[in-house]
Length: 321
Ligand code: NAD
Ligand code: UDP
Image (tube, rainbow, N blue to C red):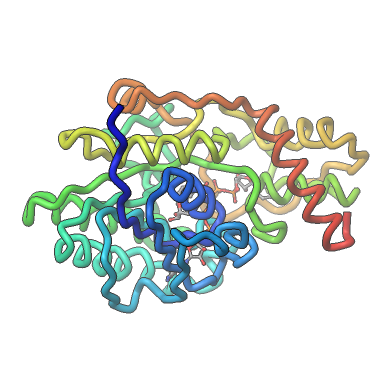
């Protein structure tokens, strides 16, 4: 039996929702993991169980400021992902994506490291092609309130591909679609956490607009599995690769499912529609299936049940459940 060598792995944004699950998976594989995070939307709580382990370290730092560490592989996840969070300081959001990517790509060049960039389905904007394949170039409003995130991520992709072409760097780009699960913040503002927290608290479940808009939700364990496979994939698999679960659902149906699964009697209310809200989103995951031999394993109901369990615990601890 051959044992995979332990690597020094840098995870930026490792104290966030997705990053903390990725750090755990890497630590469990025996790698030395350095998490670089400014804790703007992440939390020490997410990585608390890892802090005691000898192969995990946290460096509190803003990725938009240059830094030098040793790494064989880099996962660049640093960036707020919730529209509420990334629109709070939009200039910092763009700076994080663009200057952060430049810094991390520079670091990867110096270290001869492989780098995976967490991109997003938001690069497709409000799509007029459905479902979205990787060769669809998107329909993004460059000056709207979501542009700080969408255009920041698009530019990060550009920087990755140019580092590949210009310097021969080994890059990986994952276009992640809506992911949910434990470690989302109760006040994060994204739809799954909002609906679950509202339902558990017995307060109104807030649908923005008429609720006909759709998303395709992927459980966090599936997303992390895809990121690991993409990093390990053979050289020609650079991406961008869509990572998501094609199970598409309207926000109205999601609200009803969450209410049923929590046994809540919350009423479902409609608030004003959000500016530039994409109307539908579903990944074409043919490339991930072919190149990574990956498909999501956790269906929406099962994933929601696990996430509801998590939030029950968090709210009980906070005394608000
Ligand atoms: P999150 O907000 O929970 O985590 C982001 C992490 O990055 C946080 O820990 C935050 O403190 C850190 N961070 C933000 N700005 C930073 C900076 N300048 N320097 C250092 N650290 C910084 O979000 P998430 O859902 O875990 O998303 C992680 C990554 O995956 C993001 O890059 C996001 O764009 C991408 N992504 C996520 C989803 C999703 O549905 N969760 C979908 C598409 C893409
Ligand atoms: N949404 C909603 N109620 C909420 C939060 C979000 O109806 O309390 C809607 C939002 O308008 C969007 C969808 O849910 O249509 C997904 O929003 P989220 O912020 O989770 O992620 P996005 O995919 O928009 O980045």
